Image (cartoon, rainbow, N blue to C red; front, side, top):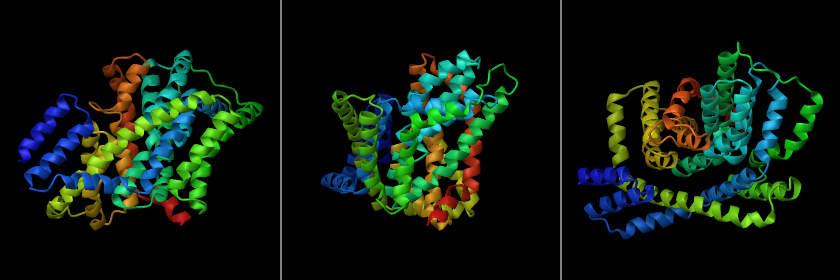
Length: 422
C-alpha cells in the first residue's frame, strides 16, 4: 500500500501536477487503504481552517501586496544608500540593508527579490560590481523575506506546533540581523579591493531619505510594538498592517490609486486560496500520520540512534536542507513540524528555537535546486539561465550555512530577545 501511494505521488510530482492535488491524492488513498471514511478528510480540513491565528495570513498577504505595489521599495533603497552607501562596498551593503527593510514589510522572499533586486542589480552593474556577485547577492538577500518578521511561514509553524506567533516574530529578529550582517561582511571582504565608488555621507540627504521612508520603516515597529505592548494580538496586528499599508500608500505616498485596489485584493485572494487549500490538506495528512502513530515510531527510532541534542539538531538540519531542495516551505513545515516538534521537546530543544531553525533551513531551500523559488524568479527577472544563477549563488550559500550553524548551536541568538521582553 505504502509503495503504491508513494509511486503515484512521485508520478504526479514528475508530471507537474499541482501540489494540493498531489497531497490530496496521498491523503485520500491513505485513508481509503486504512478503511477510514473519506469524510474524515473533509472534517479535518474544516477543523484546520477554523482557526483564529490562521486569519493573520490573508491580512499579511494583503498588507504586503499593498506595500509592494507602491513606492515603498524605492524609498527604502534610497534610505539604505544614504545610511551605508559611504562605506566600502557601500552599494552591496545597501542592497542587503534594503532587502532586510523590505522583508520586514512584505514577509515574502520572491517579492523582496523582485522589488529590491530590479532596482539594485542594474545599479551594482553600473558601479562595476561583477555580474555573478551582483546576481548572487540580490538573489540571496531576497530570501531574508521569510525570516525577518512578519513572516507567513512563522504563523503556519506556530499554528501547527502550538506556540506563540508573537514569540516567533521576535525570535526571528536576531537571526535575521545576524545573517544580514554576515552577507554584508562577505560583500565587504569580496569587494574591498575593487574600483567601486563610495557615496559621500550627507546628513541632509540621510534626513531627507529618512523622512521619505519613515512610514515604511515604522510598519514593523507598529506591528511588533503593538503585539508586545499588549495593544493587540498577532492576528489583530495583521489587520492593523492592512489599514496602515492602505493609508500610507493611498493617502500619504499617493502612489497607489484607488482604482488599483480591487486588483490587489483579487491577487491577494488568489494567493491566499492556494495557501489555504495546501494547509487544509497537509494538516489532514498530519492527522492521519499521528493516528497511525508515525511520530511515536519516529521518536522511538531517534531515541535508539541519537542520544544528544547537538547530534539531533545536526540531523534535523540535514533533513530540512534536503527537504528544502524538494518541497516548498509551507508544505515542509506542515508535514515535518508535527513529527519533529515532540521529539525536539524530549531532547530539550525549545520549540521557538526549533521554529527558527525550520525557517532558516527552508530559507536556504529558496536558493537550492530543483525547487528553489528565488533561483527561478531571479532567472526570469534578470533574464539569466538558471544554471548561471545557481553558480552565482554558491558562495552566498556558504555564508547562509555559516549563519545556520551559529543559529543552531547558539540558541540565545533567537531566544535572548524573547526572554528579555517577557
